[in-house]
Image 1 (tube, one colour):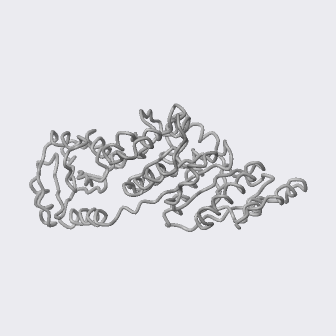
Image 2 (spheres, rainbow, N blue to C red; image 1 turned 90 degrees about the horizontal axis):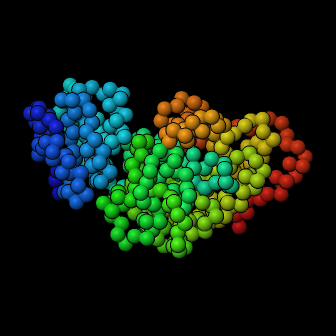
Length: 388
C-alpha cells in the first residue's frame, strides 16, 4: 500500500515538488485541516509534513495530534534548526526535522527513514524498575530514565504500576484524570484512541499512565496486566515500569520485560532487600534479565560495591552519585533533572540509559575504600542470592 503524505502550512510549491521527487504524491492542507486530524477517529496520513517556516512556531494542535495518533509520523520543515524549536519539536513528538536550503536528497532521506521505521515491527522494549525497599529513589530513577529515552524522539510510555498513591505524576509535573486501574478495568477496549485518553503527555515527552488516587476495590489480575504490557510493546518503542515489590500480581507479569532493574542503596536493610528481590526475580525470569543498581552511591560508605556484589552474587550494574538537592528541586518543579542539568547525576542517568539501548558498555562500579567493620561484614556474609 503506498505511503500517504500530507503537507500542512506550506505556501511553497517547491516543497511539494521535492516531496513528489521522493516518489510520494502528497496532498496539501491548511492549518484548519490540522485541527481536523487531531480528532480521535480521523483518518491519518502515514507522513505529516509540517512547514513552520512562515511563522517559526510549532502549532499546539500538532502535540494534540501526536497524543491522539502516536503512530502518525511527522516531518518538520523549518528555516533553521534553532535549539528552542528543536526542543519544542521533541516535546511535540516530531520524528524528523529538515531545514533550508531544502534539497530532494534531504527530503527523500527523511521520508526514507520514516518509511523504514513504519515497515518494521515496533518491537517495543520494556524496562522494569523495582526498589529493594522503600525510599531508595526507584521512582526518581525510573522517571529520569524514561525521560532520557524520550529524548531519542521515540514513543515512550511510563506506567506507574502502584495501583494507588504512586508518585510518578508528581515527578513528571502532570495531573492525570485516569489511571492504571482504569486501563486494567478496560483491557477489552484497548486501542490507541482509547488508551491515549487514559494517559497524559508530560512536558518531558513521556506518556504517563498514572497511579490511582484511590485503592482498587478488587485485586489486580495478572492476566490483565499481561494484556496491558502486550499492548504497550506493540504501540510504544519504550515502556518503563515503576513496580511495587509488595504486589505479587505485578511481579508475576514481567515476561515482556527486556531488563528488570532492582534499585538499592548502601544501607544494610536495602542490600538485604536487594538480595531477596533480585533472587526471586532471577528464579522467575532468568538471571540474565535481572540486574542491581545502586542509588546515592557514597565511596566512603561502610558498604561498598564489592560488599553488594557479595550479597547478590553479581556486581552492581551501575552506580549513581548522590545529589539530594538536585533530586528534591526536580521533584518540587515536576521536571526530570535530565532535561536541563549538567550534574554528575544527570550524566550518570543518561549514560545508564545508553546501556539499556545497547549503545555503551556498562559502567564499572567503583569500590569503596577500606574494609567493613567486623559486625557489618558478618551480617552481609549471611546474605545469599539463591538461584536454585
